[in-house]
Length: 151
Image 1 (cartoon, rainbow, N blue to C red):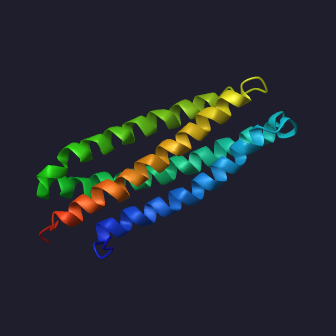
Image 2: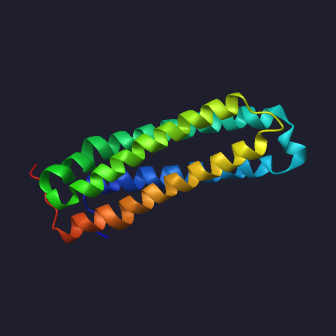
Image 3: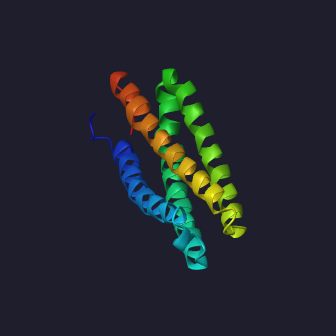
C-alpha cells in the first residue's frame, strides 16, 4: 500500500499509537483475571487512567479520519461512500463502548471484575477490527481507484 499521501500517513500513525495503547490496556485487563490483583483497587484506578488515554487517542484518530481522509474519500471517490459511512458508524459505536467502559470501571467491584475484563477485551478487539477495515479495505479501495484530491 502506498504511503505517500499525508492523510493515509496520519491515519496509519494514529493506528500505531492506538495499537501501543491497546497493548497496555490488555495487559492491565489480563491482571483482572488474577484474583490477587482483582481485589486491588489501584488496578481499577490505573485502568480508568488508561481508558482516558485510549479515549484521547481515539478522539484524535477519529478527528484525523473524519475531517481528512473520510471527507475527501466521500467527495472524490463516490464508490467508497458506503464503506466510509460504515466506518463512521463504527466510530459512534466505539465512542459508546468507551462511555460504557467508563461507567463499568466507575462501578467496578471484585464481583464485577470479570465482566469489566470481558467488556474491555471486546472494546480492544473492536478498535483493532476498525483499524483493519481502514487499512485493508478503505485505503486499498482509494489506491485502486487512483484516488486523487485536488490541492
